[in-house]
Image (tube, rainbow, N blue to C red; front, side, top):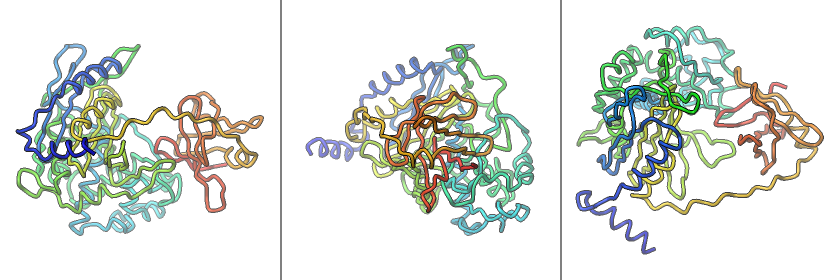
Length: 449
């Protein structure tokens, strides 16, 4: 209780009256960069309506050795989704789209099944659209609409509204709704509706604009070493799902507005209803206490409510973790594919928020499989080109994902299974108790036989 009162008293002090020691954050960042072989990272911490910490670490380019600076741009990857969602929800708040109406009302060319999807389902990953993430494609603004117009109902791997399943193409479609409703190319609409009002002056979807500003080169690991990723990925048809270029300084402006009811620099720049809709849970995640909102996951982290999203695009990784009740956020960008700084993020949170102790490693002894388990679960499950095969052999279950190696499944609870290779799988049954989906890594796979 004394600790809680002390923290509350410190948080009540004006920022100028506080002296915060960031040495633990910086030590952790250096250790994670080394351990994960990340060339560089940029970190910002927001508290209240201010950036209280901003620093870059490591190299922007391993070939030149150029030092990374906070103003340098990175590609966000899927952290882009919260911005696409904010734009579309903003249009809904203005009455330009009903999030719960069939999108065929706004995109009349869609085939029958796709036309019945709602924008809410797109934003919450419950539309039943398969997942894919092609890195390369056209650089033309017309690519987004041209791609969507070629879709058939085969883009659905299951019926809309049945289950959450992370879908990058679902956000392409959400972005095309933004484009259609505004009458502007998606990239221009995002600038007009979000980046410019928020003062995000160095944020863009366009690579040819990004390259005119200081830019951190993207890297991939090859032979245990980070190497510049060439050629750089780009596919204008997939920009709404994961292609924003930005830096921690600009991202902090969005975060400050989000944490302060839409206010930034004394002005109302985001409608509070947009923030509420983004952060509200819209889709429970099977096998988890977390939910997905619109472009944001929400749940508890060591006793604190967080809303967050991470991202991975070839050459880059990112994470924005926000604590709305405490008005604290941590922003991390790296220039290595999919990399974040999880330990450093926690160190930053601990400076301003009391976290419950980290739980110890839970020992989970496998439960005995029953004949019913074997009969119900064995089968083939599909999401687009991605495939999971579960087979029953001599009283055991084995899982094979795509062309990967087969691994034995251990039962940890009702519907909860773990594989020897570290994979976690949740079996989702229909009303008759038959396994209808396998859920793993936020993606669902529908039984095909």
